[in-house]
Length: 313
Image 1 (tube, rainbow, N blue to C red):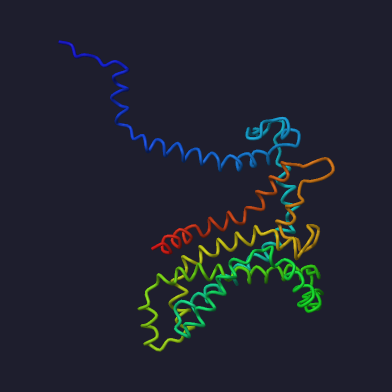
Image 2 (cartoon, rainbow, N blue to C red):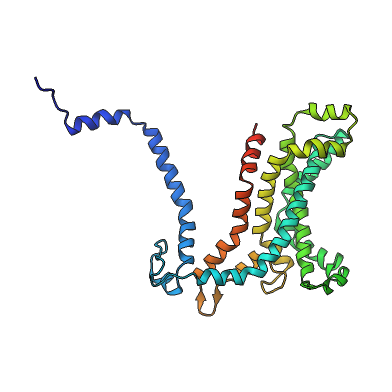
């Protein structure tokens, strides 16, 4: 006796009830969100490899293959040369500003979390730090400019320094910008570190106190080594925020043609002339300017993941 054969409709009907429709729907939603966020990056990257004529003649997200008409690397080499000075200025500002603000934020959080002293005064200082986080940039632009121009004119105070090679009086504005980012970044860095220090065991600190360790020794030998994961998180956040900041740079430096202009300030006027906007040139510049933050994320990826995981425990 021959076995009955299943029709195609019966096979489909048998498989369909076994499918997890919620997972399928979730996968589709994730794919849509992925396409939504990646498509602008892909379009910008494709545009950076096109000639000016190809940008207007082709579909934005369709790439031009290497070796064919419309493909070029000239936009990238030109963008690197155009942004080189601003790149160096931004690195000279961002690296020390990030390191100092992370260190001061860590020490402030340690003093406001794990050190026993006047509780009322400690709480009042903590409130001041938190209030500093919510001060908008726009509210301090005028007093900030007046402070660095009239009250603390670094150009005059550091006059002998500008005689050194590669330094110009305009670089005083870059120094004032660095200090501004340090001051503005400390409150948020402190809050991030404090949330992490609250999860640490008090037994380690108490045991160190019984052994006669000083406050600074406890910080150096116990707290700082345990802070490595959160240092990665805060360093990435602060570096990215300072590197991408534009408003303070525009206020304190003023012009993209200044010898002290940061990369974001130079990038703002890039690719614009009387003939129109060179979108390929501007897109290449945007990707070149974003490289340091990408490198920082790669270097501190492990610490970043550990810091987020341990900070949420």
